[in-house]
Image (cartoon, rainbow, N blue to C red):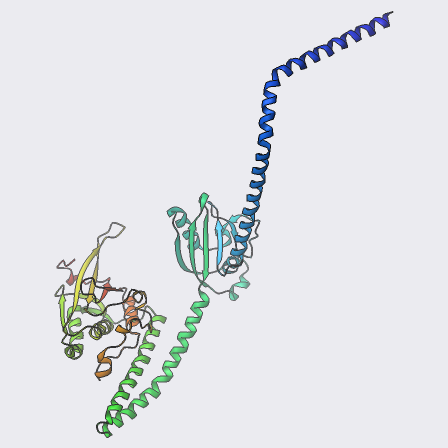
Length: 441
């Protein structure tokens, strides 16, 4: 009887619990029925679009990964080096060329290390910092001296002349393209050495030919001597070319050449140069004028500076139309120093003629050796008709630039806006005290 009562109570309890669950499910069904039906309809409408969007995103991701891999492969096989660093100057990635240029044998693609730990180049590190600070592309050139932990490798490694172009990237990163210019410099050195040796070998036979021509000049009568005179001009041109080439090679090999520097009064020097060239200028009725300080002293090698103005005034005479003028203007300018010290003095000399000037294409190249640009500035009547003319060889302006660089100065070629002729602007950094008593800036 007791057992029957137990089972009867259990059955009643189970039935009551089942009834509660049924009622609860009915209540929840009535409560959620409107929402469920609406959501089902919306879900059925959105599922195809969501699937399409997901497929599109996956495809875009695959395309981006493929493009990224393609660009990485291109950079890896590029003939120039490329490296990329993060905001803390840690090397993120570099291509094969960069590893070879910078000797990055210790770096592995999965490593993230400070660039300065891998490459002991403070110039490269400074260029990257400058790019990040300015947020503008930067360029730089320097001599890279590789360093190794193993001193036995040092004798087999030579320094390299590098040129770098950097650009800012998002999130403080910086990308750097590296160009190894050492092979080009080596080729130029071999070329210069070969030309220098050739020039040395040519001097002796040219001198012998000139002696023979001089002998023929004294023995031939007109009109046969006209051809000998023409031959003498060509021999002199070759001798001048050889001498100029040797001189330029020596200057470039030793930019800090030994100068016999002393006080030079510039106006009297320019006047003496013009007197030397005056017979050539007289053939075209050219006039000369000077404006600027009367007593202008600089510290320079007189013979070298004489050569500078001889070349420049000779060019102006050659390319100036008849009955025009050549003007030399001297100014003393003040330049403010960033450190707040007293302003320094710079001598600026402008040489202006009324000739044909330079073409825009030629202007960037006028100081390159053997560069012959516009035919209008290549030959002149004096070259073929005047025995005493200084014959051009394409090296004059290159020599002028090297002489000024040795003096710490510079030269710039332009076309004058008023005359339309050539405008040569020279700058000398050292003006002696006796030139500063008057202000011509």
